[in-house]
Length: 64
Image 1 (tube, one colour):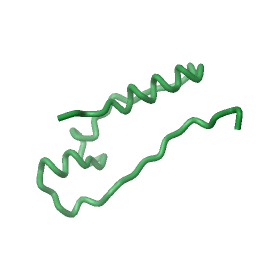
Image 2 (cartoon, one colour):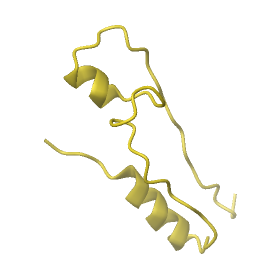
Image 3 (cartoon, one colour):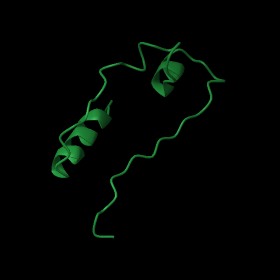
Image 4 (cartoon, helix red, strand yellow):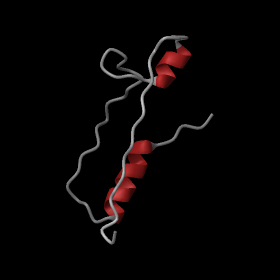
């Protein structure tokens, strides 16, 4: 099984774009189901009616 490190991707992209002032939370959505939605948590715990979530993150190209 493969888990994608989304936080690492964001960190690398911010650094590539010379953004120095940022923070990445170390909170784990899987470990905090009361606070966060986690598809992985819902799947492992066989929760069928768990809702859905989508995120869109981007960095605007300054040349456009």
